[in-house]
Length: 487
Image 1 (tube, rainbow, N blue to C red):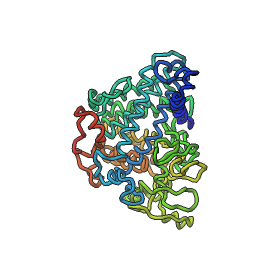
Image 2 (image 1 turned 30 degrees about the horizontal axis):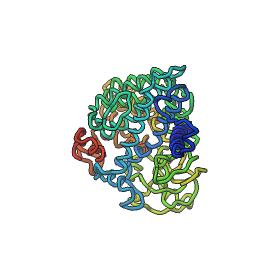
Image 3 (image 1 turned 120 degrees about the horizontal axis):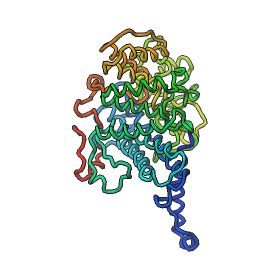
Image 4 (image 1 turned 90 degrees about the horizontal axis):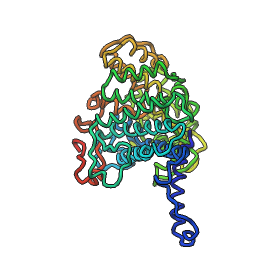
């Protein structure tokens, strides 16, 4: 559903046009004033549909979550042109970030924008009845859960306002809700989505029952509620329509929205963007940021050389593991094979995140900002590994955990393992790192399993498990919100 990003922008354009026309006295003499607000909106199925699309639109801004989720981990270094290129990335890479960080501000702002748009729909969910309304509301609740889950991962306690929009002044009166309350809302939203959605979406890219089940299982796993996670994830595996796809093409255009896709953020190269408004791009900005600097050669387009994998991550793969070639690009081997040329960037490692390198295509505007590569937010391989972890760490069924782990390993061309207990746990952790490298999950996997301090240079226990609330948010709250510990 690559068109979902256009509709809400058109609605905003109508508002701007109405404002500009309103400046003309002659026009006002002849035309009634018109505003889109709750009094004259949400009166038809089309209104609800368009507002839902407006919530989906914000997903495209979550590219920054993916980039920083890798840069903060031990998988990659920040990269870029120099030590001053996107300072926020450099600080997160070195664990020196503070409450003044533009890129962490983006994570807070853009995910709360998604929550706010969802709450606007939910505030008026009962205003007009029509066939299919429950499905639209279910998708909106899934999206609110998605954005809220990102916020609680990054920042811990956050303000909640139920099914109402935040308004000016709420920051002075609404507290940051405890993490358990945040997760309770996430779980409630996802259960509603599960109960009201099908495994097949009415349009490609929209949320499904399977996506809601997978995210619910993940939310339980993050809380170490292993029994609950195992139940929902194994039900999804047993009853869902998903399967592992060909890894060789999984991150190519032909691999988008395939049988392994549980939920993807849809992107298109049809509209340009600029650095003044990266969130306005219809393309996956993270892809251009990860491209090879000054690259000239086949297959790929050049980019800004951020988020470069370290050799340790490359060396994790056995030589016969097919994922290595299609996950991490060894640039020197590629140059020798193809005759391509490139320039080394800052913190050059010799490797690039091949999953999300910009491919040659017909995108418009600034090619670095309008790459059409979808983000594979939840893959079936992730579901299998989450289920294996829940079954193993919860002491539920190591045999079934091995089955799911070995299914992922078999696709990679690796032999089955026969381990159990803690040895199996470590194998599952290692497999998650290899399978999901470059996809933005590693930092949070390390934090939630208590392994971050042992693996991330500069990580301070009791502080870096969470990121700081942006300074301006703390100041706006006038003492209502406390900063996260250590910041």
